[in-house]
Length: 142
Image 1 (cartoon, helix red, strand yellow):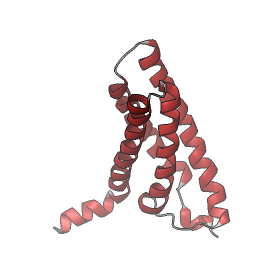
Image 2 (tube, rainbow, N blue to C red):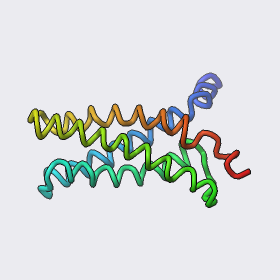
Image 3 (cartoon, one colour):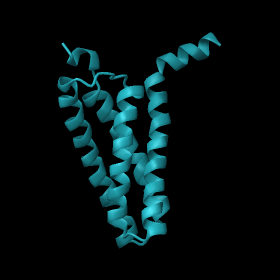
């Protein structure tokens, strides 16, 4: 049991990111499915709506539980908000591009390609969050 706990503590950030990344993907996929398949909104607007909801969910969960950035001071948020949303805009554009090409141009399965796109986006977002956005939350307040 001690070895399991040690492994968990060693990889806690990655494990938490996987959990909340999975939940973020669920939010994204569910919102996309609802918009595109149930409501009948076209593909690209459905991707954008799903992205907005997922990014808002991801910011809070990543900040608090993945990277343990508990401060909501103006100085901390002045760094975290633009870098987080900037990185997410970049990967959001990648998502839209993939979905446009796969669904609208090539007429491939929208659900399969939404999942593939999300996996790529999750990997890129983790790297950006770990290296740029939530790197040293305690040092930002000094």
